[in-house]
Image (cartoon, rainbow, N blue to C red):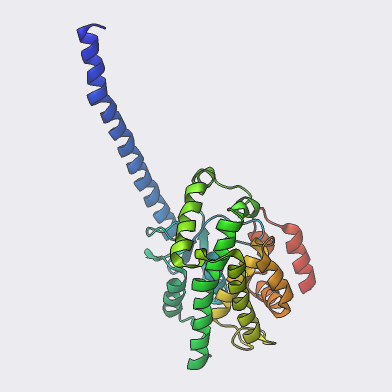
Length: 298
């Protein structure tokens, strides 16, 4: 190699290659910014006071694999709030899903979004409850969102080793397949630090069973959790119970729901009330199930 050739190679390594890499990264950054701006413009075009619900793609057996998506969308349906669903940007700026956009404002937590939307649209679906009932409803909601969910996650990420993703999704994104081992490791760490991941499988199953029995006992023969009139907390209960019933059919928790007959009936009751188009909200859409449901109503 001549001295000139060596100098040229050195120049390529020190100047041209790093510059090219920087140019590519800058181009990708600018493209992502432009794409994000276009998406914002699209959401704004839906109209003022139209909620845009951002979430992952639909599931094969339930409208979502996330109970928090079903919870928030159930509330929008219950409160009769106009909304559009966006699957292109499932993660919020805070890295959470689901999230909503309303008139340019981002709401990035399912529970907080429900509370803010209730005030915005005057849709407090629990206004008929007494203060004592509201306290009980909140306790049950927190139990589902912050306690029972962790037991379910133990089965999904530890026992089932994420097999449910492939089972419950028509097309698992390539990015998710590649990142799944790292994501599972992250969730296993979260389960350990939360505490429930330190228990044996049988202990976790018993923890979830006690939560489900408590709900069943409180529901009794009522149509809804807090009596014979639906309220916000039913969106939370339905979301988590339906998630188990449709997305965890190989788990011991599904058997528990089948044994607690009033909970199974409760799931079907709320599905018919809030999700008459349930079959059409699956991926792929289940037109047979939808036609059967329509025929039963007639």
